[in-house]
Image (cartoon, rainbow, N blue to C red; front, side):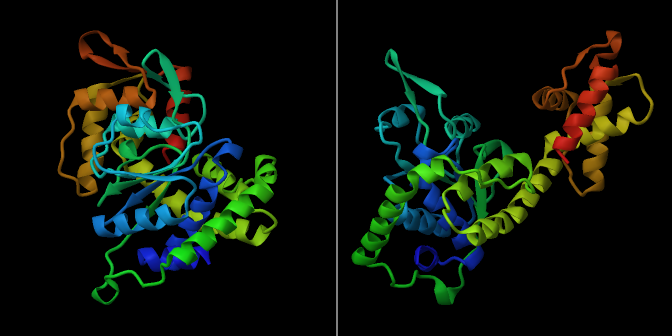
Length: 321
């Protein structure tokens, strides 16, 4: 019933509404979970707004906030009982995305007038027409929305106050009955990659006495994990690691940053990209992924390919696919 209501109110296909239903359940159990999985919504703005409004009807303690939210605004929220934040923020900054990502876990505190607050709790954010890795809060499952057809431009008139209240009452009873079981859940999704597995374990823990629904969740998250893997491998960080790995296998004992930049540009040109990245930009990317460069005399900065650095390159390349 919950999935049908979300699908009707936000004009969603079954797969997307099912994933949102699992996430909605998790919003009722954040105090019993090790993480509060985030939700990143990408697609047309009208469809994004419909999803946030549908979630508002069924999440626990929903709080909708509009574009331009700052850390100061979040300090004014009552975090004693964590709300479910629903953010419409297509221009989210990297800094805010990082803050939201950190607060999917407990104990990351933010200073507040001589004291500190923990912003831990479930958060859904509409990111705009397109998303990017560096502006997607970590520990978030991403859903991609598509434009609705003219025939279905308006949500079905299935929302009534009594129906919404009835489902909220059922969710509240479910929470009271199963909170301890959720807290002690041993559900695991080892077939998924580490970051998606963490999200799946939290979502699946909220489904009690239904192995089939837990199995369906894993099936729903597999394409999400594959897309995340693809996005990571084709990001500038991923291509920088690919270029570094290519040069390493060329038998060099040292690699200059300028050589990595040239290889990055060669790879991206072969894939139809037109941008040329400077050595300075690529140097920042190398540092960002965890490859610390050093000065190689007059040749400029680069990597010395000792055993530790070689091992690190291969480990990171594996992470980025």
